[in-house]
Amino acid sequence: MEIVRITKRHFLTFVDGLIGERRFKVIGPVDALGGRYSFEPLDATASLRLDYDETSLSPRKFLLPPRDPLLTYTTGDPESYMPVFDNRLRCIIGIHPGDLTAIALYDKAYAADGVDDQYRVRRRNTLLIGLYPTRAWKYRFTSSMIDPVDCYRTADLMMVDLGDDSLALEIVTEAGRTLLAGSEAHSADQATIETMNARKNAIPDEVALPIDRLNLPAALAGQERHATFKTRGDKCFSCGSCVQVCPTCICFDVRDKVDLTLNTGIRYRTWDGCTLQNFATVAGGHNFRKTPADRLQHRLFRKTVYMKERYGITGCVGCGRCTRACTADIASIVEMVGDIVGTGGGHA
Ligand code: SF4
Ligand code: SF4
Image (cartoon, rainbow, N blue to C red; front, side):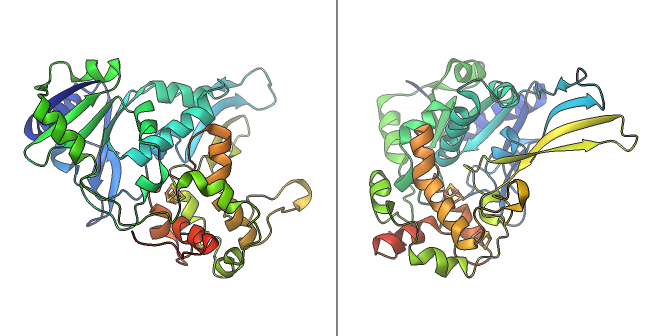
């Protein structure tokens, strides 16, 4: 893989050029609320914060929007439906390895079998520039959860802060190479490559899963009724915060909105999540996960076992957002696994 080096000043000039061209919608982390970071469209790099700890939401909201139009139609005319595609070109800058791995999961779940053209079109039109974290975050345990190879399935470029006034960029795809053409990036020498490799792990996680992730299926086998689900479930508000913030939550509901004249309508999907009370309610009003304990159990197993089995990619990328977002302080994947394997989980 080719490695180039660019000064931070030249990188910002390059991004300002992309913004000015208006060919892409350029998106990156900004300080949205006094130290709470958020991926947002950029008007200029003055607001870009590559030194962010973690964003409240991952870039999921740009690839799988919370309200995603699927088709329009005229009521009473089954031939009238028209699929809706989002063809805008996007470039998302500064995505941490965990969030890139979550996008690899979307690629498997939404695009691999060709059944979801809305996702496929949006993904095809989106360039991704990854970034190894430049600041610690007390909830992150990504190193425990991801195979680092998976973030290279989705990134077009991967950035590493070299700890001085420069960045190293790994050119992962031809689209990434084309994007960089005309920038002030130059081939990296051997010393830069060695610094880059060392700096990838410059910010160690403060939290660790208490067991090797490869042992999760065996460790959780037969633990569906473990007491931790009842103990935690008794405190759960079923508010859904944990699933709203999760980069790997890909479940959705489909709804119709018909206009006031009742002549036309739009069908769209919205985020749904397995800790919400009615997520598992089916025809006849039967809810097959009635209690919060049932829902927490399902969430843990889906994140740590089922998604990996089905898609080959972890369902939890260790971002730690659910731990911070939980209104009852019970959603931590690390703590739940720790309860089950008898270590209590927690800080490395
Ligand atoms: S389950 Fe929690 S830690 Fe894991 S990816 Fe989702 S939000 Fe992040
Ligand atoms: S955020 Fe916490 S309280 Fe809310 S549904 Fe998730 S586990 Fe329950």
